[in-house]
Image (cartoon, rainbow, N blue to C red; front, side, top):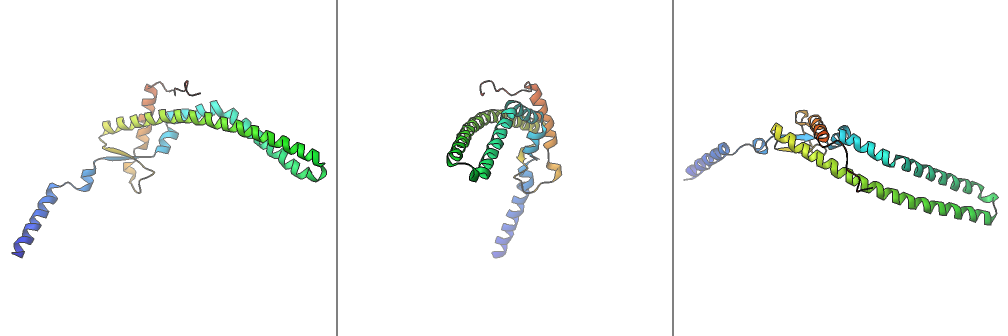
Length: 185
């Protein structure tokens, strides 16, 4: 009786192993992509950097220069504090503090504007990347394309980043090659 049960279990196991696909077959064709390379090496990624630099580069440099100047004034006050009268020291300290508050206000406004534009650009860039991945996967028989930065191991053969960059660039050109930021500024 035990022997028949064991034989039946072995037969059932063998039949299920034949009928069930392996885990690799069940997973389908999977591509791996590096999203940082996709965004930095693709045309829309480069355009995003260029656009942000054009829109905010001078203002950032001006804020950095004002911050450095303010730090220099504070350092000069610290060095000269012993030689200054209390009134002169307080006046300069108040002037520096007022300038620091103004700079902080400007910096906050700058950061908020920059953030709004970055969000708009990232949203449009992500839409292009998603559409390019979907198009590439359908054309090349991939069931899934995953983020290579979160995959613990994959072979170079699974890396489709270069091909995706080409697909992203084609899609970007077909959509006009520009970010729509008129409503964001």
